[in-house]
Every structure is written in C-alpha cells, then in structure tokens.
Length: 254
Image 1 (cartoon, rainbow, N blue to C red):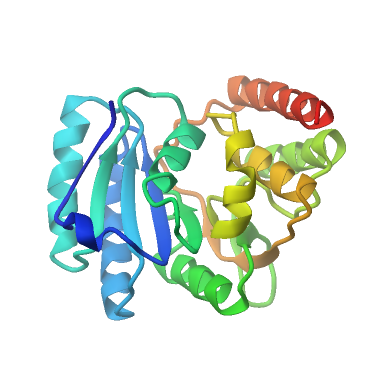
Image 2 (cartoon, one colour):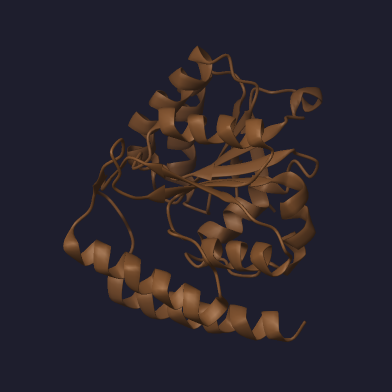
C-alpha cells in the first residue's frame, strides 16, 4: 500500500496543477534540483502542488527523501512525498502520484536530475495554463536554446523517435524529454488505457492522446546531460522497442 507524507492538511490537497518529480534511489540527484525548484516556486508565489514520487527505493532513501522534503518545505510548503509500495518504474509512479488528485486541471512531471531547469519547467507549466493546451518540452538547438548531449545519446534519441513515428504513429519532435504538462481533461480521457510502467511511459502517453484526437504544443528548452543516470542503453533500448509493439497491438484492438 502506498502512502504520502508531507505538511499539507487534507483540505489543502486540491490544486489546479500537479507537478510530479519521480525518483528511484535519486535523493542525491534531487538535492540540488529540488532546492532550485522549491526556491523558484516560492519566488513565483506558485499555487501548484508538488509531489516527489518515490518508486519503491527502500528505507534509507525514504528517510533521505523525508529530510529533503522538510528542507524544501522551508521555501515552498506545498510539497509532499509519495511512497509507492514497490518498484515498478517511472511510468507507474508518475501515474500513481497523478491519481492522488483526480480533478486537477493539469498534470505535469519533471525529472529529478535537473537536465531541464526549474525556471524552464515552470515557464512550461505557465505556458500550458495560459494556452489551455498540453505542452511538452523538446530538446532542440535554436537561437535561444542549447542541447548538450553526447553522440551516443543523440543517436539513441533519434533512433527511438523514428521508431515511435513508424510503429505507433506519434508525431512529436521529442517523445522522451523529461518535462511534460498534460491537460487534465485530456489525461482523464485516456488514463485507463495506460499500461506501460517503464521508460516507454512517455511514448504510450502521447500515442494514446494522439489516438484519442488530442494535440499538444512543443517548446524547445535548454537541456544538459547530468550524471547518475540509471538508464542501461542496450537493455533499455530493447525493452522500449518491445513496448512500442505492445502499445501498437493495444491501439489496434480498439
């Protein structure tokens, strides 16, 4: 059974926008980015609810996250930690955390490593709220944005993107960037169809939104590679490719 810890009372749990930061044995990486995010949320006098969602990391990480949450609360009180009962994957824990607020107007998530800065993540959320549309961050070099990634990561990125286009028909410039804002009504319309618990969660989310007739905006952001990633390039690439075929089969059955 999952549970939530934080300073907010039950009556304060309703929020217009829910921002989830998924973590799995990530307390060290979260420390710097979490403080940056808490400070930026406070500076903007934000009303969103921030949930740090732990994907079954274990007792030691639980204690570390509790300490971090208390630290972040000093700057931004509307933060809490959600602990999943078991480790299933990023997609599972993001959906679980989003389900805590079934009537939210927007559901967002941002990765804990800080590859997308707090400023750009909150700009993304505010842009989505202003436009009334789902909005995705994309890694793209422009006159105002810079992407710092090595050649191998770039090849994996474009390889999976091509597979997404061809296998499940997702038309996006970047399915996997770890910063997304989804309109609540759009998400609720497809939430029960989502089954992928791992790294293919993003691709399934977009495939289901597209199949249901929903669209989204894409915004280039600065992106820099951070250390400490637990992605295993070969194994995860095989798993994600297999997931795309599972997604296609489910879509075709409807």
